[in-house]
Amino acid sequence: MGWMYHTSINDEDAENASYNEAFNIFLKQCLIHEERIKKELTENNRFRFVIKTDGDNDKIYCCDGSFFLKSRFLSRKNFKKRLIDYYRPLGIYVYGPHEFKRRDGSECNRWLIELSPKR
Image (cartoon, rainbow, N blue to C red):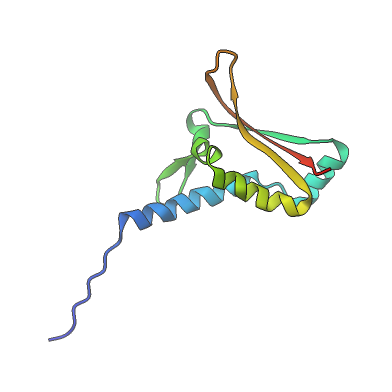
């Protein structure tokens, strides 16, 4: 009689792989190439970009068909830390991400990330 091996795929591991895939896809979308951002900051004192998180604009799709929300990543400290890790060596300060709010305090599904040279 031979050996019998059992393997299992933990749903949690699959979810983490999808989470990491979505996180990295979105992070890459927020990282502006060094030459471009330095040019922009030379011409202007700051560079701003707005991320829309309404409806389908909020979804990041993974290869396995699952999706994660940009708004969830934007509200987490580790996402901002990764932005800082990328921009700090370039001498760029990261403000945000900050969610825009209406005057009545309600959400408007837009986030701001602002970059400026360190002084």
